[in-house]
Image 1: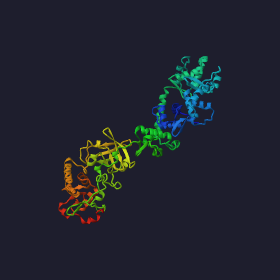
Image 2: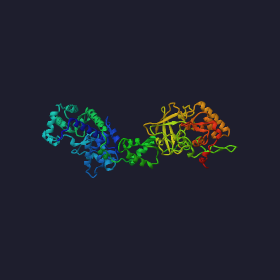
Image 3: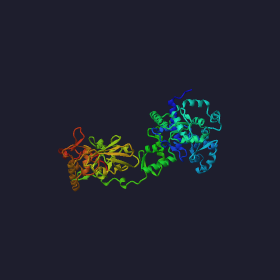
Image 4: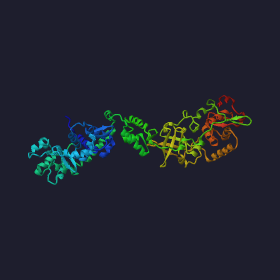
Length: 606
C-alpha cells in the first residue's frame, strides 16, 4: 500500500478546498456555468481553467453538459428517494446550506418551482436524526455532529462512528487545549493551528465534550466553531486553520503552472468531446456581437465556449460557429473570422467614383488620316511590357486583371503607394493589396484603421476593388503622388494600424514642380485636340522612364488605361527601351518613321 507524503496530502487538501468552493458557487444557480464562470466564482488567485477543469472533472460532485458545469445531482436518477438526494446535496456542500439554496437546487433537479420546496423542506429538515438547524436558515447533516446520548466515552466514540485508534492518534498529535463554555472558538482555533495534522471535526468535538460534560451541546459546538473566522471545515469534515488558505492558494497556483506546461492528454480531449455551438451558446454569442458591435471567432469561442485558438478543439468549434451563424439574420459576416451586428453601409462605398472610371480607349484620327492611340493585343507588346502591365503600381481600379496581378506577399502588413486620384477621392485600389490580407469575402468588409491613437472606420469593397473612407488619413500627406503608407495588422481581427512615416516611392513620386508641369500639360491637352501619344512624347521628353511611372504621370494628364500606354510604347519606332533596362525613351530622330507596321496584326478589332 502506497503511503501519501505530506506533499501529496497538501495537494489533495488544496484540490478539495477548490472543489468545495466550486460546488458552493454552483449550488442553487438557475443555469449551469461555463468553466470561466465557475473559476470566477471560486475567486482563487493563480489558478487557470485547466486546473479548474481537472479538479471538477475528477470529482463526482460535478457534471458537465455542453461544456457547462453544474452539481451532478441535476443529472442523476430523479426516482431516487427525495431525502437521499437532499442529503447528498448537503453532503457535497460540506457545510450547512441555506434552505432557499437547497430549494433552488432541488427545483433544477426535479423541474418544479423553488417555492414548492421552500414550503416542503422545513418539515423534512426538522428530522433530527438526519439533519440539524445551524442557524441563519442553514441546515447541515446530523452525521457531522458528535453523538452524546450516552455518558460513556466508548459509547460516544462508537455512536459517532469513530474509532478508539483514531481518538488515540489525535490525542498524541494535538496539543492540550482548555475548553471553556463561551470560549469554544478560541480553543478550536488553537487546536486547528497547532495540531500536527488536520483533525476530524468530531474528534475535536469529543475533546471538548470530555471537559465540558453536560455543558456540551453538539449543535452549538458546531455552529460556534464554524462561525469563527480563524477556522474552517472542508467537505472531509476536518478542522483547518484559516491560515491554511494561503498554503492552499500557493499549492494550487503551483499545480496550475505545472499543468500549463504539459500538453493536453488524450483523456482530457476525449472528456471534453466535440465542441459544438448549442442554442444557449448561440443566444450568448449573438448578444455579445450586438453589444460589442463586432467580434472575432477567437473572442466568441474563448468567451462563450471557453476554447482558445491554441487548443486542438478550436478548429471544430470554429466550423460549428460558422455553421450556426450562417443563417443568423441578427448578425452579419465581416470577413475572416469576424461577425458584426447588421447595419446599413454608406451608399457611396458601392460605387466607383467617376474620376476613377476609365472610359474605353478610342483611336485618335488626324485630319490627314493618321491614326494614333490604337490598342494592341498583349502579344504585340515589346520589352518587359507583357509582365509590367501586371505590376500593381501600374494597375489601378477599373484597369487591372486581378487573376494575373503580381501582388506583394501576404503578411502582417501591406505596403501601399498613393496615387493622385485616390488621394483626391479618399480611396485606395485593392490591386496593391494581397487578396488574402483582408480576404476576398464577403463583398464589403468594414475595417478599423488606427492612426496616432485615432480610430477610423473604412470599408473594403471586393466588388468595386476599392478601400473607401481614407480621406481623413490622407490629410497630412503633402506629396502629389507616391506617398508610401503601410497597413499593419494588430492583434485584434479587423483592426489595423495606418503607418505613414514620410517615405516616397521612387517609381510614383511626383514633387510639386513636376506636378505643375503635368497640370500645365493637362490644361493644354484639354484645350487642344491631341492624342495620348503626344502626351507620352511630352512626358518622356529627353528622360527615360519606367512603365509604371509613365502610366502614373500620363493619368494625371489624361485618364487612360495602362494597356493603351503599353500599346503606344510598342507601336512606334521612336519609342524604345534603353539597352537592357526597363526605361522607356523617346528618340526624336525616329519620330518621322511613325507607326511600326509589324504591329498592325496585333491591333485590337472592335
